Length: 406
Ligand SMILES: *Cc1c(COP(=O)(O)O)cnc(C)c1O
Image (cartoon, rainbow, N blue to C red; front, side, top):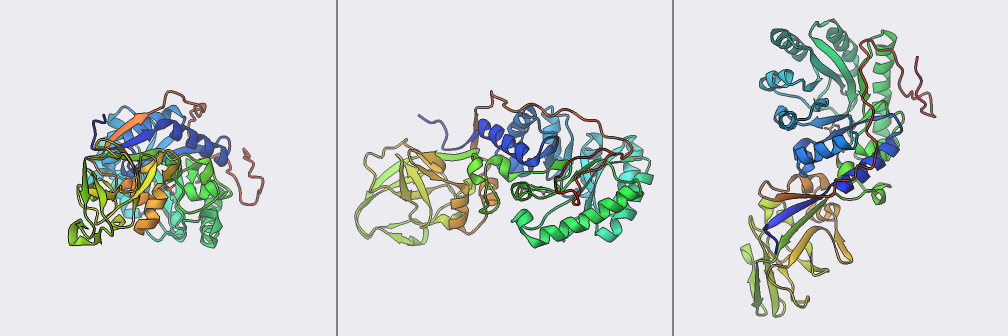
């Protein structure tokens, strides 16, 4: 018997495997900052982060100070970066806990400097350059000035220089090359003025899987570590989805021809059939738009979602599947028998992206973990950051991408 109405089964060995794939693609010596925002895309940030650390990730990327503190409080001491921005009220918690912050403006620089000074700490700053995302970050022509301000601030430490790619196709998009050209321009100038320091990072999953060159010394994959790629791109067969979403049949009912199922009676039985009710609804992450569109797997066979998905329940037609019983495990995402349903398939049918599917797995869905005893990849050697920038990075002019030390 299964004790849960609905559960997300997380395969930590899949995470290990995916991190190994990412490591191989990123290249030897390139650090992985694993993005674990949104509760690790719905997979459970604390468990994911602890296992990822055992697999050698060098840092974690989060979405807010609360996410950073949850990880700190769970005993993790590695660098944690709030990738986007904090609001002012989050600053104290971040600085007290040594959380790295992305920097976007002079105003924020001044605020962080004075706060860090009053707390007696050095704030770790990643300068975020907006090369085309148009959201956060300082525009390239202002980047050098802001960088200088960071260097001149007594209580700020430059821990990184970053930019973020807007195209879901990664290096396959022309816009990515333009973004990289602008980023390179800032890096070159910063290097010339001996102001470059910390980790240099640009690549998200799409960039890692489309061979963005150069990749710099750190990559920031998120979704690929969970076994999913942002768009249909080569490499998905190398990855293993880490999450399965499972429920069980809670009720069976034989209905006559013409009988309606669900809110607004959007579906009627064309013939007498058997309806199974599942105790999982849109609050748990089954998209409402999968009403009359989605499929699940029962006893190794696909069964269609019939009627609307409701908040707590989903109804499926199992008239064609012999022997379905109350208590049968139902796979909403994952593999069973010869069938498998991916988060990408759900996303396609619901008119959304796979990111939203896993992130929306609700908080009453129990996360269960398996695997994780094997840590196949050697831990990344810890490195100390040079106080003064003294090394070069992969250069765009160097197609072999060989790291050269100056
Ligand atoms: C979310 C995020 C990532 C990871 O993106 P994926 O597409 O999931 O690999 C990387 N960098 C930043 C700044 C992000 O916000």
